[in-house]
Image 1: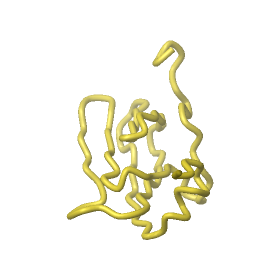
Image 2 (image 1 turned 180 degrees about the vertical axis):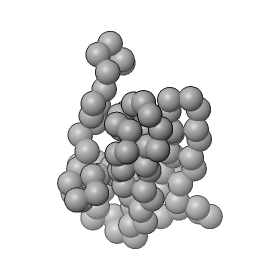
Image 3 (image 1 turned 180 degrees about the horizontal axis):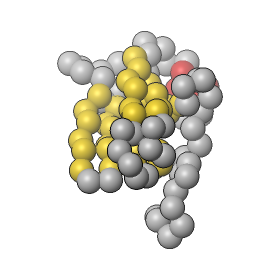
Image 4 (image 1 turned 120 degrees about the vertical axis):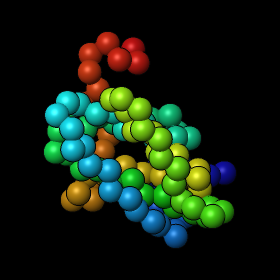
Length: 100
């Protein structure tokens, strides 16, 4: 049974990270798949998405649409952290009324 806690995911090893930076002027949603978790970034804010485990060909797929960046961790296991390495909680800075 896979441990889906951040510690369990980290234990899968083989980490590869990608920075996601909001260069816009408004709040930006970062949507992580396949977990289906949302994180919200203020202008100028940067998060690190780290994929763990194994993947074929490439560790991430990224899609952008207005107001949202979706990151697929093709290994199926990923974390989102602040620049200091601490975990970003799911729903971080989510606007009122979104996904309620």
